[in-house]
Length: 228
Figure (cartoon, helix red, strand yellow):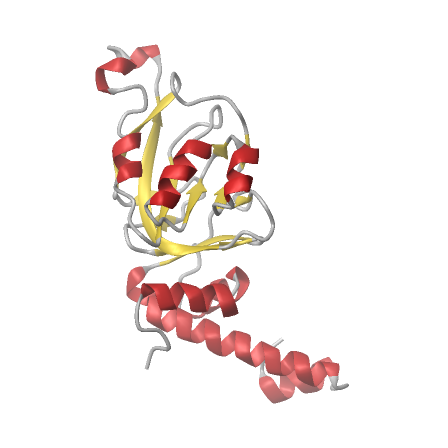
């Protein structure tokens, strides 16, 4: 029987007891072996943790070859619609842009917080770093870069299934979990099994740690607990 009653309880439990490495290990056990975002996607500050439901957003570069004017569909495409569609405990997770401009900033973070969103995860850059850090809004990105997307890119779709730059996939409603070791996607269909396995593993690791601290050797601990 699950230890959580709703998403709020699940995400609080994950933030309290789990970390990305143990969740990744649990998914390896069930054959989900390409669930991490690229390793360069890291928190703006090491103590940031994100846990929530994916609200995937697709970005695309804009060039003169596209024809027409960016103003025909708004300078940011569907970005404001996507942002305003965020719900409580959801994560704005965006990919599709070239590494030439930022996908997220302070004002977007302010609006997301007002809507109760859990964080932002960018397969690309963010900007307004001081402002985001002052807000303490969990933001994960591949780097900090001030150049704006206004004349360079636009959001073309949201709440759609995406493939990240390293081949990992994310669908609406998947769990997005990130800490200082990276960001991992837990598919909805496997979440109960994966979270239960991860909890068992981390609690087992705690028992191993306690045994080693009492003087048990590593080989003996592995033989007894099967964890290392």
